[in-house]
View 1: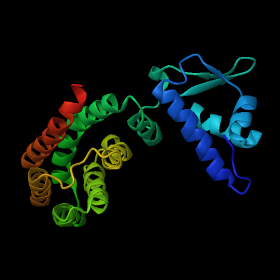
View 2: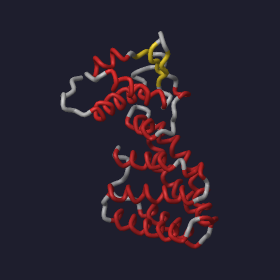
View 3: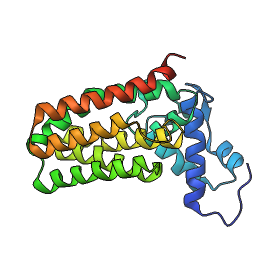
Length: 238
């Protein structure tokens, strides 16, 4: 792969990182395969510094391990940081997309109803008002078919609830949820217009949080994510 001389170091770094990360998560590079800095430099036309820094990032994600006199070895999936948003995106973009969507949706079903209930107990007045406003904007944008803008409000909606719930462990999952929401849109897995039931349920969650009704917020979020799961079932059964 040739690289134009004027391309910046950050672009080169991201090119190496995304290509090799995708190769590993897709299985094109298998567990136990060995990489070398020399081969990376030759393949991508990058400096040793860029090659080394890219491998350091992949090592921090658990995708590779660097050992003296052995080289840079691809690691098994059990070593990967599966919560890293970049790892999630690579998996969503590859042949393991359906499996990744299933595991992420199941994680959301386990966590987000509890987070919505906790937000109904713990959210500030400003956060309660904001979640209602986001749900209203989602309806307007969804009914207009403005999917990119809808997606960003959807990300903000779920992120707000995860961070307002008072549980730092749930809050730390906000980037994970954002990655799957954006991934569904970018990969063409969302309908041209959100289904009316989903818009209704976002508003029900928001209203329950705003009124301080934990049980109602949890029930509405459970129903919302059941709708998401049902929409994904045809993919999982293929």
